[in-house]
Image (cartoon, rainbow, N blue to C red):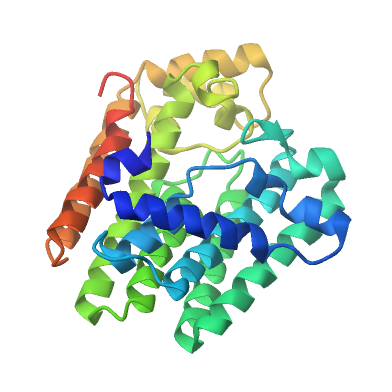
Length: 325
């Protein structure tokens, strides 16, 4: 997905080019070693989805972003990057964005401390934007933490419920997307009703984004994913298609016999094929479509026709990436 093309608001792309400069400057402390660590993933690039949501929500593609609009996006992106630093330590990841992960290059301790530093910079930038922005980022961090705990608490658990799953992805993924849209509405002083609508769109966007990712983990190729298909199964992260497959009368018992512990490559592939053989993928797509419908309902409140069309195209493109959708 090229989010800029799907959004279709050319001025937002220009704004994000300006944001990129502020983002790079925001992590320069003056210590050569620390600067190299904190800027590692920034230099690796990325889609910058969270700043895109923030800036588009603020400007609707109808004016140039103010410095406050851009800094709001920077604050969200720094919190997202910090969470990646911490996630890679927990997952023992070696690659992130096609480059060596921070923990692989510098060690776990440095990665954790650098992630903490990025969190601090995110909070500092938000505080400079005002008490409401600082409060938003504090609530966002709390929700991220709850989502992470919800995932870790149920890792390798065959008793993980759908409620556990949705609690985790709402906290880990949807919260940052929702807060990005709310931050943009906040820096632009939009009406409360529009701010709430954009926040709900962002939440639904995040839910669809994660549901799409969880489907792709099971159905895409290793070249597409940059990791083996079914890696979440091997790591004990039982996502919605897997939870649904565990209840399948035909393969549920066999799948249950495989899961509950780390998997080698053969058992990972065997488990993946069992999940794909059920209707778990189709039912997960249906769940994503429900969030898509809610997103469109929220967008109906947004007065800008250009932003409504752009955000509608952006969220629809997520499902279009699913093989066979």
